[in-house]
Length: 563
Image (cartoon, helix red, strand yellow):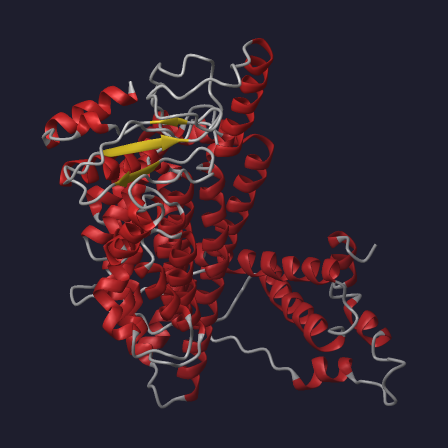
């Protein structure tokens, strides 16, 4: 019941207030009774720098003072939030009524300024006049901000009910007046709490999840990006603390809210924010905030860079590199040194993200541009791991390991002279191709074998794995073995005597010309061993017919074998 404003007004009327205060003088937590009535009646003096003739206004002034005394002195420990808010609202409404009445009085303000001009600054009454004028001005400013706050609350409540209706009204309103007032309050407002509510309101208005149209075709966003976003970014340029041509000192809280709204736009408005960034150089404007004294605002700027990088979009990656956006950031980081603070952690987190996600263009730019500075920093492992990631890139690891790769190729294509002398024995390895020579092998045959080996290694990702291919080959061989079993005394096609069942040997020359051959192990597809098997990616036959061919004819022959 005490939260009812009408009950409180009745208790605080002139005829009841002293009795109420007398009852409140007895506090069980305090041994001695408090003499509130004696203080208000004897010690408090009411000064009138300019006579006020309206008795109702005088009663409101006295009531407001008693409300403040009751709230701040008598009941600070006993009031709940609801009663405290009710008392504060009563005091505010009384102040607004008093100031409004004094302003509308045609004789009051002229008399006030006349006394200010006639009184000497050394006189005590002059200080009372100035103090009265200060109180009146403060009340007027507070009442103005309070009205704005209530209006913003109304907008927030309407958006929770139906944000589409409010968005349509803002778009169709002539000259977009209300939308412009919201942007103006965010850019120029003095009340931080009101600016925060305006920022939240604008984020709700521009949230793509509550829009019927896609972001690219939304007319409301078109109005924001074409007419109002420049006003917010110009606030950064107008800050005289970071720009030589600045016109004012912008509060850090205002800049922080603008950065928060820009982060929201980057995360949600892909097409429009990219176009605006490219046209207006948004990132460069934001990076100017790295020179502010407030460290939390510098870290907010680093967070904006992190948002651009986290998107993993080619546009932002190329933009950050083209305009050297990491230059100012790394400059501030190096100036910070090895001090373990929030700025150091924010930049290290950004670099670590680039390393873990392996964003190659940014990683290469950081190492190639600032690698010599990173080598001097050993207090964390981030820079060593970044350099290691850079060195492990395929284009650098491949060039450094060419010798090793060629060595592996020689192992897979060993010289027959090292295994079986002139004839060359068959290695019992299924599904692999071995090229071998007798004596001094020709250059063309060795090149053909290496090209065949390289073609085998460049398998299509859609091809079967080795185990799968062996599995299906064995099933097919078992079925053909049941229907067509070869004669046990069947000889090899070249007439050189019986060979292992299912082995196909290419005819090789033992002359000094160094003919080359190939051997493919596996079961024979049938009794017709004289038919040349079809070459596949895993089984490439390089026979003696390739000797003496040019490189161009060799490539044609290999392509025909693949067919």
